[in-house]
Amino acid sequence: MLTIQEIFETQKMITEDTLDVRTITMGISLRDCAHPNPRAFCQNIYDKITTKAKNLVRTGEEIEAELGVPIINKRIAVTPIAIAAESCKTDNYVPMAKALQAAATELGINFIGGFSALAEKGTTAGDQKLIRSIPEALAQTQIVCSSVNIGSTKAGINFDLVCQMGGIIKKTAELTKDSGAIGCAKLVVFCNAPSDNPFMAGAFHGVGESDTTINVGVSGPGAVKRALEHVRGKGIDVVAETIKRTAFKITRVGQLVAQEAAARLGAQCGIIDLSLAPTPAIGDSVAHILEEIGVESCGGAGTVFALALLNDCVKKGGVMAAERVGGLSGAFIPVSEDAGMIAAVKRGSLNIEMLLAMTSVCSVGLDMIAVPGDTTAETLSAIIADESAIGMINNKTTAVRIIPVPGKKVGDLIEYGGLLGSAPVMAVNPFRPNALIARGGRVPAPIRSLTN
Image (cartoon, rainbow, N blue to C red):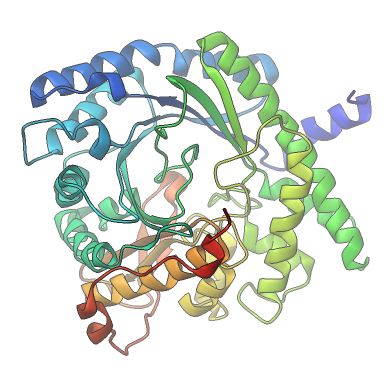
């Protein structure tokens, strides 16, 4: 039972500390939409999404008004199109992306995810058709998001696909160069991708999910930062306890929203994603939390320690507050979406190598990283390989959302606006991994995968 004081504390988090529910994401299965005729399949997609999610935006707005909790995004995730469309007699999956765009636009949805392929062990014909369609699909749509899972702890790493994805990212950047290569901001390469992730650009509706589900992603870096301001100079155990208590309160808000939304929409209540998702807004930064814990500047000595503490305590506090926890659940470190991260890059304390180290203990991976436009496809693939190795060996989700911006060099700033913020172009290691990427092949699963 919540006390009056706890209710007032939560209300204060909302009004003063930028606490919000980042997203209500409805997952919709497209498994019953399969059809060999591409036009019929696209019509099936449109019809099912606009039927199942017709009240999603209105319901989110009603809950927001009734509970006084800001709900920033209403999103949809669908069955990976590479699976749902495999029976279609076509070599081009761009029309499917346009069907997703049309349905989401009709409903007023912010983003729709699921232009995706799960290919950690190998690729089917459908997987390859989708992967080759990604650059054009993202160039011709605005709110469609794409993801590719290239590895897992159980399967190892599909290194052939790792090598291919560098070129896919480069082509996507080129086709969207007039908008700062924004197509790459809608493309994520995963290792150990979760099937119930409500956050874009990596959301898709897993094949093991029910027909429709509601997954909720909470936020709240500002609330955690404010709580830690009250324990300055205290021991690290006090810091840990403060984060846990704050994460519990944040997650309870998400749990309430999820239950209400699922009941009103007639969908299964899925998971609460505990992730601390920052925004460019002042006071809503994960980097500033790390600095409040005691790191002089994010990226400096002690950063990985502070991030590990934060991530673990967020999970411990949140898991007690939710019926089901899933998705990514931890602290996000997207450079362009976090004012503190941007400042750290500008002052020189944060580089890609430190970000890579941080991903071994945080929620996801190298997220919204802008790099020079002349970065080679091989270097992009090698960065993906590094990140996926961390995920595979540590049995955790890792991801790469990297943006080689044509015509831009280190130090330039790319403005995307909204939640995507502004991305400072970061330097990459100049030594080339071409011989490694030329090998191709498949990485076997690590010994820790043998858990049966």
